Length: 437
Ligand SMILES: *[C@@H]1O[C@H](CO)[C@@H](O)[C@H](O)[C@H]1NC(C)=O
Ligand SMILES: *[C@@H]1O[C@H](CO)[C@@H](O)[C@H](O)[C@H]1NC(C)=O
Ligand SMILES: *[C@@H]1O[C@H](CO)[C@@H](O)[C@H](O)[C@H]1NC(C)=O
Ligand SMILES: *[C@@H]1O[C@H](CO)[C@@H](O)[C@H](O)[C@H]1NC(C)=O
Ligand SMILES: *[C@@H]1O[C@H](CO)[C@@H](O)[C@H](O)[C@H]1NC(C)=O
Ligand SMILES: *[C@@H]1O[C@H](CO)[C@@H](O)[C@H](O)[C@H]1NC(C)=O
Ligand SMILES: *[C@@H]1O[C@H](CO)[C@@H](O)[C@H](O)[C@H]1NC(C)=O
Image 1 (cartoon, rainbow, N blue to C red):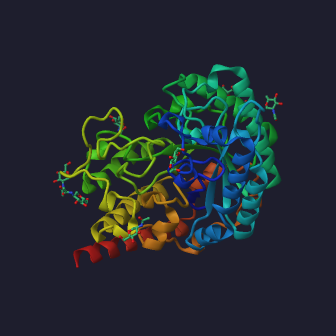
Image 2: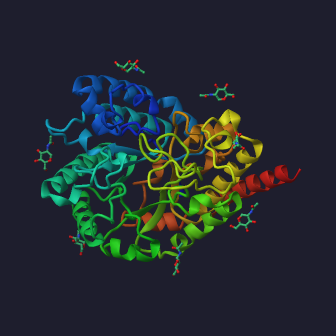
Image 3: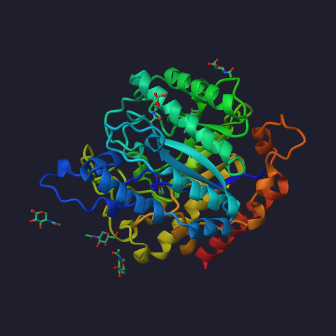
């Protein structure tokens, strides 16, 4: 099996203001404080009936079969589907609405027919595991404070595992939780939850990857987040270069150099017990994108983010316009060239030296550096040879049922890897040639 070349189907079953701002631009209240900022307040403001009507329309239309077909044609072989717990385990007191699963299964059906593998990703846990809007609820995180939250998280995972078993030729991995906060809970407590989830999942099936997030710990400390008895496990790490007051001030050359620096210890990490995927990355090196720091929040780049007292960017004029204005028709050719080199630099490591990658996100409304389909169309995201896409039949047909999937990842066919490396090398060479002429 070659590297995972994946795309996140984010902002569908768990809405995020920056991915689909139009859902959040309909509200008109007397005070800004009352405006919805996440799916929780979106549903609370509209009420369950209207929220369900609007969300059903969104689930039905924001991701289509054509999107998946295009991805497969461009050489993508996996998708990662973020889902909130409330699709599985909702109480009447919570404002969220459910009803997502038929749409998730429609997506699984398309993936099955098209030949894409799926990672189901629990992206929001009861009480919120990190307090970000991308957990469904921008709030002070409460997740591990009560046993009932943990039980409900496990109940959602049990139902996700049932889906995986039912769709065993499509669902190859379950990420048990996205970005739980190590700033809120000790890593040992998060590992305890990981182990409970592992025991539950493995009591149901051995046939899916058990995927965990690194809780934002550096690779040198990942050993404290892994148990020796896990099999077919993958560590998910997210690598971004714009949510940091120092990194955002780097110039283009320094951002590209930073790709190697940030991945250095990841590639050095001993992957014998657990493989590594970069489950999220993007082409962005600024935070001008509307709502990228949360609904109603400003940007480090132009100094409008709360807590930042001056603009933070590598230029003398830190303006969220032009190349940084979110309208790709206004991008300069030099910025387009940078996006391509920055994406290639990331892929040259994640694709060749790790178990693979998932770009965030498959599409957006007006966030070009986060939009895979736009990136391919506009030429700053490469296509991969279709021949490199592993076929569905490559799983479960082995004569050696005990062989670890992780072993297979680390022993990827040299030809498949070589051809991709060559394609990238050629793309990089072609770009370098184009830029020097
Ligand atoms: C919002 O509501 C106020 C008061 O009802 C009204 O004057 C204003 O035009 C509305 N704005 C929008 C954008 O609908
Ligand atoms: C949610 O999970 C809890 C804990 O396992 C369980 O008691 C409850 O019945 C579940 N609710 C739903 C709607 O499945
Ligand atoms: C694996 O090890 C962890 C930590 O030692 C333990 O909590 C868990 O129950 C074990 N699981 C299995 C299936 O042995
Ligand atoms: C980019 O920044 C580095 C140091 O951070 C500096 O050495 C280099 O000259 C800068 N390049 C440009 C083109 O400004
Ligand atoms: C990588 O690991 C070394 C120690 O092994 C450490 O000094 C360095 O800060 C780490 N780099 C990053 C980017 O975390
Ligand atoms: C600042 O830069 C933007 C483009 O990045 C440009 O549109 C704007 O006119 C510049 N402003 C000044 C005062 O130079
Ligand atoms: C993007 O820029 C183009 C060209 O300047 C303009 O025609 C178009 O309306 C802009 N799109 C948006 C969404 O602002």
